[in-house]
Length: 497
Ligand code: KIV
Ligand code: ZN
Image (tube, rainbow, N blue to C red):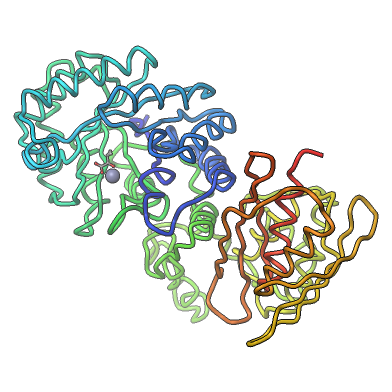
């Protein structure tokens, strides 16, 4: 029987802090649900006091997810803790993650304080959080560079105050694996009451040693690993979930295992990469495009008779279907259904029919349809819209005003309008507004390319304000003007009738 290692995923908090990786609430819920299916124990859903958007995401993720504990980050500040408790009100299992910097550098320069005062603030924060939730996790920021003897005093004090988990972050990614192992071991041996709490590792990858340090810390006695999908995170990133999970799966002799369903790893890696617009480096362990590339060489050459001589992980174990086929315009409905299933999406017949029609239209424009495209098609056809775009024609160019004519189908009736604007998107949106005469304002408008080529799909995210509420719209199309109009219509479809 293996010892249980708890997986604490912080993709939606530490990962999402990366500039350009921000997700809206709908996308965060999609990732949170995928994390639940993957089998993580804890989802760090955000830092509620940092923005209304983060607060709202923690609320909505708490409602959407059942099994994992939902965790909210705070500083050692009472207002942060109150706001986090409020954001967690709907969580079935909730945890507040509070803490403070404990290295001399943090104490002196960040807090202009001293060790005794910081220790008191740490204890006060944990005690205050305990008023709201039973499960309180404490982080000693920059623990990697904190003197072990002082760190042990802080950890002992916060456990006495009720901390259930004590997080030892290597915030700057500075430690060496042996040093980090020794730090965790030191805490196991010198903190009175350490058995009452779980020790967590939270390693950053500044020197490329996040996974090595995490594994070392776990071998030293930690039993919670804080990780992100694809190792995304500030600067060089956080420890990657897939690397830690597969290290213990590959080294059974260590007697440590997680609850992760590894066959979901590839799917969630692609989902996060695509939503966050953060490509995975081709040689990234476990989830990089080339991570198992040699196996196809083996098959082609027919040289190797035993896969295990060259592969320590069977690609199928992490959700790579070796029999996967590249989908093209000639692929049938069954191939699309199979690929969707591999990506974790099972569609009813009607939705599949619609997705297949959209697939054929896309395959007409793109030679090969990849998994990102398929995930996009699947998302598009989950919605059953009352208002649909029937046609769009736009004239635009340099030195002329853009003009758009548009046809909408609203609950079976056909409407047309024509409008001009200061660009093609503005013209299309003005034409839509002539048909749908409700007060609405585009608050956020983001266009992203999924891959690289000029024949590629553009994704559009839009937030539209209507009667004091914000509605989110999404679309993807090889034509970015059409995608923009569709995203606007998608948001309008969410207005109350
Ligand atoms: O890296 C770090 O120290 C953190 C803490 C807030 C846990 O992310
Ligand atoms: Zn961090």
